[in-house]
Image (cartoon, rainbow, N blue to C red; front, side, top):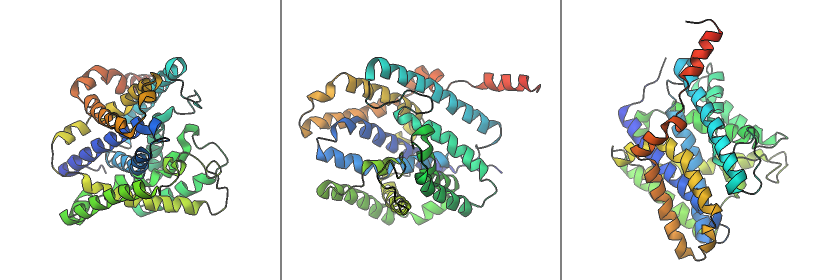
Length: 343
């Protein structure tokens, strides 16, 4: 039975989706500077405590009713096409222009942010595989897999296997969340408290420097790669889940419930996601970051990243880039029907 999205829930999560892609742009834009600017490192770490878990949660929410059947197959094909196109494009530009250190050019090693496309396909397939389980059972299995994947003796970045399982619990939560129940619980007072807690977390990280190592926040490495081969390393992942859930819940206090500009922009975050990396990589390859020597000079970087997110979410960008960002896949489905003799 297909699930439908309540209108107000769709509005809220579209607002959230744009705020998240805004933080993605800012985090990626300041990343080349965080090693030498403590304030930016604090901002970067704060963003990473919530933005991937919430982005996965939102992705799960918008997957309601579209996992299986023709729509589900079409979505999987489209995500696969997006990956092939942008993995090829980013890899070509990296070889010729970007030259990011320690990058492996292979379809089995997603280029930087493209891991999300591979993992999105994995989350959809895993949810279909768990369809006979109740929601609580799905979450329990997802959490167990997220902890156990860290023990595998392989490179966690291979086909984004680590992130696929590490963030699977958030996809399950998003898929099953009831917006009506969420709205009844998340009263105005609780939203103010949550927003204050989110701001407090940023302040604490900035003043104390207390933040988990980036490797744990990325979720892309096994325990061995993180330097923790101990049998109890899974407890660290469990603690990380606790931090991410608390930080994500706190950030939700910043998200407006009303429909507005953010709602419209939130409909085109895929374009921001796939295109902003090209521009930031070009800026890095140009040597621009070498001129940013003082924290004050980083303010335009943050502002520029925010403007970039707004610019790439404009309808004109969608009109121009749609054939690449949302490639047609009906021809593949047609070939499939012909191959199997279906009308």
